[in-house]
Each structure stands twice: as structure tokens, then as C-alpha cells.
Image 1: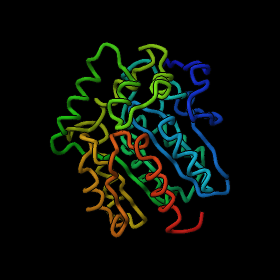
Image 2: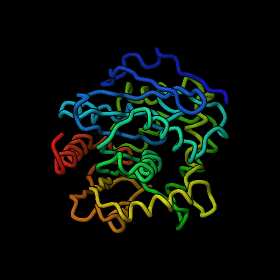
Image 3: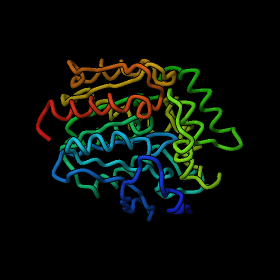
Image 4: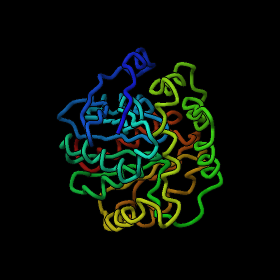
Amino acid sequence: MQALRTPDDRFDNLPDYDFEPHYCEVGEGLRLHYVDTGPKAGRTVIMMHGEPSWSFLYRFMIRNLAEAGYRVLAPDLIGFGRSDKPTEMSDYSYNGHVAWMQDWLDQMDVSDVVLFCQDWGGLIGLRLVAENPDRFAAVMAGNTGLPVGKGTPSDAFLKWQKFSQSVPEFPTGMILQGATSRDLTTEEVAAYDAPYPDESYKAGARIFPALVPTHPDMAGVADNIAAWEVFKQWNKPFLTAFSDEDPVTKGGEAVFQKLIPGATGQPHKILKGGGHFLQEDVHAELSDMLIGLCTRFGEN
């Protein structure tokens, strides 16, 4: 497997993102980047991003949670951010991503973790929870899912999937802007483009929409069904925080609230004014919800 590594100077002087980089190796020698900030003695909060964003998406929430006394880990998935980027789309698979992140989680050796996940951060992160339930104390999910290949995807998702596989130049920064309610600054759009000096770095970003299990025979479906069996017995807190302006995941909170015992009685919210990347639009409210979740079941 050949992989590219984005030059470090592409990440200089990004707005509101001055966190010290941390790295570890996963899989067959791939370098994975993660943010690790906040007091080490505090409860650990993991924030997992999706497609085609990276940990820059969490810059406001990272700072808010760290200032509240929590240790925050925010990894960049392989193929994204400051992590290495295998060059062939065939290098990426749903289960492969889970395996890479399991390797990272094992190396972090954390427990009593609270997970916040969005988009593919949920498809991968919720698998980690199901496969490592003793490591996790609670989950907060926003604009995400754990699909098992049933039903018909939304028109918005199908259009996005077709676009991602056919557009000649994959416009990462503009994709973020298009799925965010507020106007990003020129510098913020550039920060989402920063991991990708040219199209050769974007194999992972391009292939992700095609990996979503939309049919029962797709890779990952059997593992997701097994994960749901874990969540159907999950009595720890499970909180949903979906937004009102995301056509891709609208209504997706219902299945979590219906099937997961730990979702009963939680202060779920539909956040007003949030697009698909609600971390950009309503980060203050998300931070407050996450801090509240952390404090409701024990001191940090």
C-alpha cells in the first residue's frame, strides 16, 4: 500500500486550530494524527469526524471541553487531515477504517470514555463502542447513523454519492461550505482544503460515500447488525443531537431513541440552525450538551 503524507506547512496558521500534533502508527505503518489536549486526569472525550472533514471541524468544541476540565482526543481518520493518505480508492474499506481506529484506540488505552460522533465518525465510532463497550461510559451522536443496508437512501444522499464519484475535481472546502448553514470564512474553507495539495491525496475522501452500506450484501452490514445487538442492550447514556437543516440524516435520531435503552429519558435535541456539519453552526450548544452529558453521570 502506497500512502501520501501532507506537508506540515499546509497546516500552519489555521484559524482557531493551534493544537500540538500527536501521531501513532496503525495498520501497516500508516501514521495517524490526533489532537490530545486538556487535563490528562479529566474524563476522556473522543470526537470523531466524518467525510470529507477532519479534526479542524471540532476546533471550537475541543477548546470548550478542554477548558471545562476534560481530556479531548480528536483523531483524523486515515485519508483525512494530518493522517497518511493511501493513494488507491481500493485501499479503503468500511471494516478497514474500523480496524485502523481500533488500533488507535488500543494504543490510547483509555477508559470511561464519552464519544461524540458525526457523519462517518458515527459509522466508525459506534462500531468501536459496540466492540469495546467496557471502554465507553456514554455516547452523543449527531447527524449520523449505523446502517444495515435496509430502506431507500434519501435523495440528498444519492445525489451526494453520485457527485462524489463523478466530479473531476473534488472540492473539499466548498463541500463543507455547502453543508454548513453559516458562511465560512475564506481561511476556514482553505483549512478544509489544506490536507489535500492535489487530487492524488483525495482517494479516501472520494470513496467514502460509496462505502456507506445501502444494500444488505455490502461490506460492514453483518458487523453493523452485530453492533445493533449490543446497542439494544446498552443501558449507559446515549444522547442524540441532530440538526434541523440536514437533508441527509433528517429523522435519523429516531432509531437510536427507539432501540437503545440508554436513550430513554435523555434530553435529546433537534438543534435549530445547524446544517450537516453542525459542529460549525451550533458548536456552543453542542459543547454545552456534551459537558452536561459528561457531568450527569459522574464528576469529570
